[in-house]
Each structure stands twice: as structure tokens, then as C-alpha cells.
Amino acid sequence: MMMNRRTFSTALLAGAAASLVSSRGMAATTPPVQARNVVLVHGLFADGSCWSEVIPRLQTAGLNVTSVQNPLTTLPEAVASAQRVLDRQDGPTVLVGHSFSGMIVTEAGVHPNVSALVYVAARAPDADEDYTALAKTYPTPPASAGIVFDGDEGRLSEAAFLRDFAGDLPEAKAKVLYAVQQPFHKQLLAGRTSHAAWRSKPSYYAVSTEDRTINPDLERFMAKRMGATTIEVKASHLALISQPDPIARLIINAAGRPE
Image 1 (cartoon, rainbow, N blue to C red):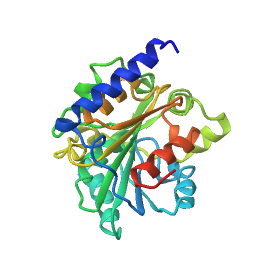
Image 2 (image 1 turned 30 degrees about the horizontal axis):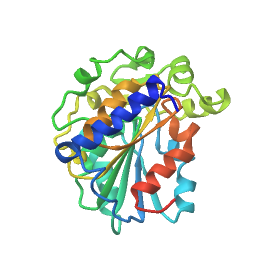
Image 3 (image 1 turned 90 degrees about the horizontal axis):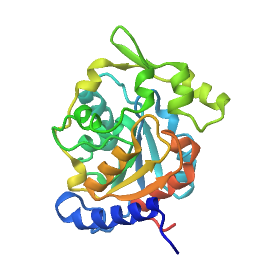
């Protein structure tokens, strides 16, 4: 079968990721530890209910699931909220982050209960990396222009939320999600991670190919850099809602459970 450019690029990406694992990540060389717990962390413009399509699929697979309510105030406070939930887990736990909460997963993922990391269209910085500077090396995604501030609190405008954040969802459903979006504090965006958990934990990444909130090529770069086991999902930034089956399968695989 003749490869098109995307298929060929994907094959090259997979080969490059495998060759980089020894120095940059553990996903391809370390079999997943069997985990019974999953902790989910939401990003900007959302709350813990954004995982509502994924949670029942994980529960059906026999996993104990907790969705963190990220305060979206400062990075240390957001990390602490995840750490408190991780402290309560009774054994190996898969830590999953969407969007901005990849910052939280990268920092909190060094917790001893964490057996694997899953990034869903998420930021995946290195330790002390300026993520904003990294993101600027790629074309700016359209959603960035839709952020509005009320003093120190930021949120997405309704138009940007429907078009650029949740573009592949029915409008009525996207409007429900818009209604519960939580504002974030400007100070949150200034935080930098002091650890890169993906350097020592098996990592998995779901790229959203139609993402208008984080550039898909930036997602591919971060997944490749960490040597993550990677899937690509034809979805908006909200693949966890529009395409919950492949996202749930990726998490189940990270938990060492057979499909």
C-alpha cells in the first residue's frame, strides 16, 4: 500500500520516538504496571465534569476513577490539589491530564503512587521550561485570540469556545460546557514545572489532529520528545468528549489492562 505524506510522517515519528526513549522517556521500553486507579485532571475553560464521557468507560473496565477539581489559581495550588487526590489512592495510579493540566501531570506525576502518565491534547513541558516560548515556535492556534479577561480572571468568549475549543461537538452540548467553564487566574500561566515526570514514568499521548487550542504539531513534538506511546484522534481540543472511546482505551492501556 502506498504511504501518503501523513502516514509516512507518522511512521517516521514512531521510529524517532523509539530511538529517543532511552534518554527522554520510558513509554516504549517499560511495560505498564497494572493499576486499578485513575486520577483525571482538567485544564483551562473547564471543570472536572469534562471527563464525564470517559469516566463510565473506565469504570466499566474495573478502574477506580477520581476527577480533580483544579482551582485554576496558581500552578503550585493546582499541583497541590492533584497531589491530595493522589495521596488518597491505594496503589498504582494512572495520572491523566487534558490541555493546560499537562503542566500539573508533569509536576505531580513524580508522586510515588503514579505508575503512568497520559496526556490528552495537553501541555508537556520539560523541567523549568518556558512553555509559552516553546508554543511560540509554532503557529498560534485560533483559540488564543478568544481569551478575554475580567481583571485577573480569564476565560474563553462564547464564540471562541464553540468554534475553537469544542468545534466538533453539537452546539447545544458545547453551550452546556461553556456554561460551566471556570475562569483561570493570570498568575496560573506564569508557573513553570520543577520536575518532568515523563522522564521517569511511562507516558502516553493523544494528539487531537483538528485542535484549534493547542497546535497539533506542537502536540506531536511534545509526544515525540518524551518518547510517548502516541495515538492521533481526529477531534477538536475536546477529544475526551467527542471521541471518548480511543481516549478511554489509551488510559486503560496505560493502566496495564488488556483491551
